Length: 429
Image 1 (spheres, rainbow, N blue to C red):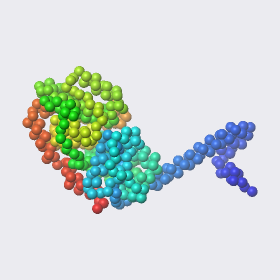
Image 2: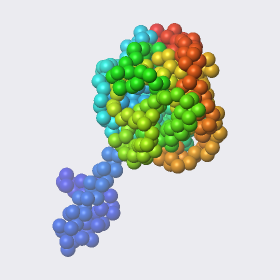
Image 3: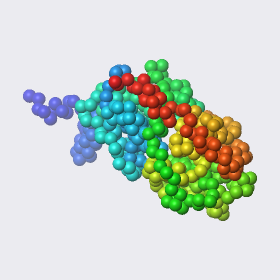
Image 4: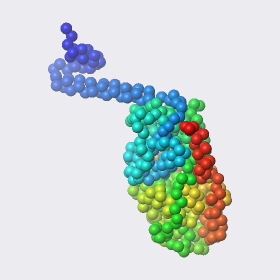
């Protein structure tokens, strides 16, 4: 008669049974070793089962799109990607579609600073999922959820990349999506280079037209009324090497000498708590210049809009952009912009309202954490200084540039054009 214990014993792998026999003189040690190996075998089986479930749920079947639209992203974080997710959600709601939100801020360690304004999807809703997170976070999220949030749903990845060539490490994420959208043609071109033939990559810029246009309030930020205020703002989590604030600082200081007119450069920094050394380096560089002010306050999107509206010029000498949210927001708020004339920002910066700075393309160096190879732009600081000096000194020309922002025809600033583009990509009605 076979007992249950004997049946269990016979099901054990041969190496485990052999080890138990060899340990006859040490029953406790043999029992511990047997238990450990049994646990390891159970964990390995569970892991294989989990991976199988993930593959089954994540397998793409090119399902037809249907409502609701669920935007997955960093909805509660003060972060550029968080603002992008919030804008997409508002855009599809403005297009008349039911919208849901899944917040992953805490999943990646971002503090939850903002309320999530759209409800989460119910377990029974099988609509469209748009994951506004890049492939490294997407792969981790799908693995840890076993693909459950995208199982049985059409899944669109909304990815942003800032260089000409997307990283090869992103390639496995294409297995998880039916298609990919990007905020710019520049980013789409980079992703098409590594996308498989079945995955279509299409630009859908952010719907900036939804952003409010608040009045200026210089007193709130202690900004002088008798000086031209230049704003540059960047997130250290997007790396100081790419945002390149040091070039902007040098350009402003040279412009001050050329313009012969007092001006203030307000340098708004996000992420300084995570990168204190980078902030300290910036502070040391401008410590002796009273015309440059560092600002590290945490601002909501609405407060940031008030700050931008309170300035006269927005400056960015970035090395590369996948969209250029600050510059687009500035144009929407009627502000002249001055920026490096390369990458995605040139898609919405027209010469009627903006100034593009000359540049040279150089190899990517010194930023191995995210950007490891390829090339990006090195802005011509002297050219930037000359153009900025004229913008500071010539009130009439600056006003002309500001007025021209209202005629910018890019899809980000045109409600009907954006709705048509979104509805063509996602025909749910």
